[in-house]
Image (cartoon, rainbow, N blue to C red; front, top):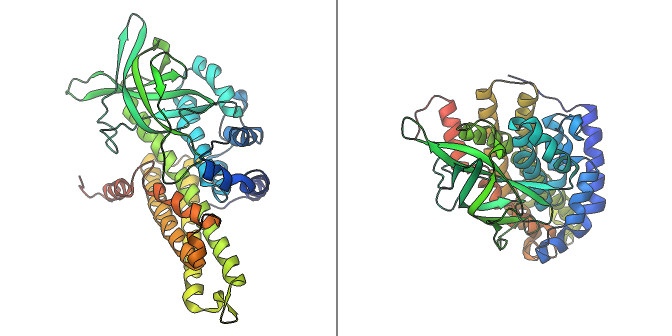
Length: 389
């Protein structure tokens, strides 16, 4: 199995992102959350720091770096604000990567420079109201008519799809039928502003209040034939490969959440006193915080192990299994970590003036996005050779 060790360069990079997050994001994160405000200027500042181009080729303005560096950045941004952590994760994993991996030279030249620089964002239109985790059960259709794709359908829960920076959404659609009767699935790039493409009003979400998330409607949306992304009919394989990467990135976001809970709880337990002693001197509190340290260490190890497999060009099956394990453990641990941290804070943990309340609300969706915990267990079981349905 591929082993991993974060290099000195990775740790130096972590320090840079941590300082940026502390100075630029942390002071305003609670206000953005309270106002449900997508912080355009903060996102642009992330672009100026080069965070959106970490894994992109230098010819498009990227750093040509490794996947591990992206995970480090997501962890550190997520440590202060999960909303901006998911903005970065989705912008790269779901917006840039499909174009970078499957796009034509012309498509890359047209869209990647702005996306890599953080001047623009892209969404990934996969989930639909009636399909959920069933990526193959799409109803959105794209028909080729007179040299153009005409797209009709609806998408839901699409990140970075309706912000002032959104430039395009890659839409998963049925483009025909296979000989065996199964739907032919393909990816179509739909630029923002195309007639018939509408980002409906943003969701009123439980958490991730500063993240841009919309349902989409597509009514006779017409784009040129060359907006097909990758090979026609290979959409499902593209989606699944994209989601494998995304699962590790979500795991990194969860690691940031756990680390935040550990740090906040440790500080609070050392300062808050009852009966004239710090609450951290009580085993009931101290042991809970010790469990947070174990969760952080375990989730971080699994996440960067999976990232190392990708960076080393490991076998697809090995990476898929590692990604599912990391995503499952890290996200479920994050939900538990926020519950433990809120309990450490007691009544104050229930108050929005303390960031722990925000992390508590933000954590739950980690078990859902990029494949639910149930889907991860199914992937892991299949990887073990079990005939699970």
